[in-house]
Image 1: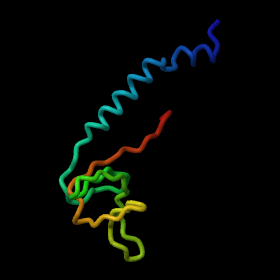
Image 2: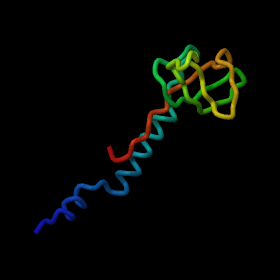
Image 3: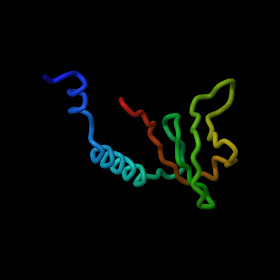
Image 4: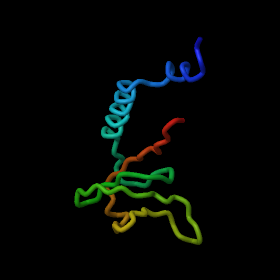
Length: 97
């Protein structure tokens, strides 16, 4: 007799499947395509490279609120938009979707 629990176990990914998926996703992320300067089209989390060759993770805030123009929000780091030479989008991670 095939119970619901057994059915779920049969359909659940195995450890090797999960490792392969994580490896492939990590590899694709590492190969992320850098875009030369300019500004992104959408808000979100980005890896940003500056003129000194540093790579920083920051948010691109594209929508103006309270009269504030679109800008890079980099937490404790400060970087002028003119110092950004390249960036690439970091996709949101949503497990189990």
